Image 1 (cartoon, rainbow over the protein chains, first blue to last red):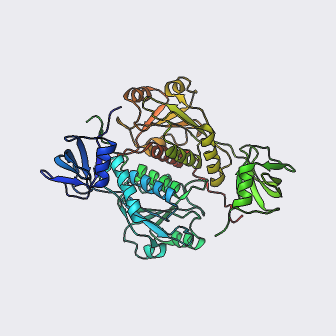
Image 2 (tube, each protein chain N blue to C red; image 1 turned 90 degrees about the vertical axis):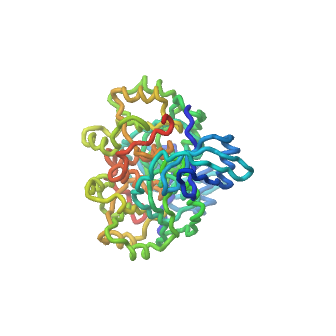
Image 3 (cartoon, each protein chain N blue to C red; image 1 turned 60 degrees about the horizontal axis):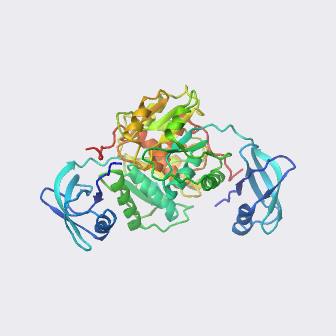
Length: 256
Length: 256
């Protein structure tokens, strides 16, 4: 089976003639897991300067230096929806962050609702999960991960023109794809937030509040009670397939 | 927050005047985790006889007896797609089975493809995962989990009239929702199988084979390389929202 070139996210600027020092964890991965030698090729991206091919210049104990060779893909605009969710236990939380990254989310906004049990949310750990997912899925950016905020504060500062797609567990709503097709061709893809409730759902008061806000679009995800992370991924998938970038195809990184 | 009544899958027949002996793990859960007492109410389903309310009659060391009181929901027809997938590592495999159950899959068919690394697939463990997911999401059936079979054998015995929705990583295809809307209102929902490839994708030969079969519908899942379990859940969500049962709403189990 063809090997895909290692692909790493870095904070450094990328450009012609520059070199990049990779830190401990990347160095360990390249040296000890992949057993790469000097002159092996890697791809680097930082979310700003496009994707670059480089060659390993030196391999030391806890440091690997990469000489940048050329830009292979220019940086695309990062369009896509934001995701608003109540923090859940660590396992499902990592699944949600990993899959939301694969599904092209630009911002992850944890929210505290009335029925939110788990209020601890480790931004650094979730950022590491998102970086790993971005490296693996070929995307050239890492979603921004915000600090948790109470739902009512988020709603009070809601930006003009942004829509909030709300997966409603109760009340009368149309299925998500049918609703989204109504917005096809007259809605900017970077002006949407998708919200899914906590394990116990939104409270009746929150439901009422959300259903009455002018920027909220309530949709249904069918007759089964989806777990919070399943609801997030289901809503995101439907959104991407109708309003997102699923017209595009993966870059063929193996055969280039 | 309102408590949802415990909901358990059993193999026994359910009917008026019958009682059911719950085995070790259910007994432990009701006694030691939920700390229920005699006369507490539970819901039981078996995938055939509808959902029944019952009361705990006796609670012994490793056995709990439930007296059935009344049927609360009749057994619905189990319509929905099948899912064909290459076995992956245990963690992602459990995620795929759990979420596929929530997303209404009727059959799970593991397949062995050219690039399938993990050939071990524990049917019993996966069935336990599917049962737990069915109990929690309110569905009244458990998907059937088949033994792994080679892809070419599965294709050689393909049933007449069944379509195979194939998430293609390469080649020219339209996005999934657009393709599925073309089948809206003239395709039986129980006549679809969704196929996602293994970690390394389908081989070029398998790709060519699948693209040329008359019952295959190839679709795209966008520009990012989705993990196998993400691709399965994304395709299933899009399918359910267009051709499935997402017109229906969850039963309100909390406020009934």
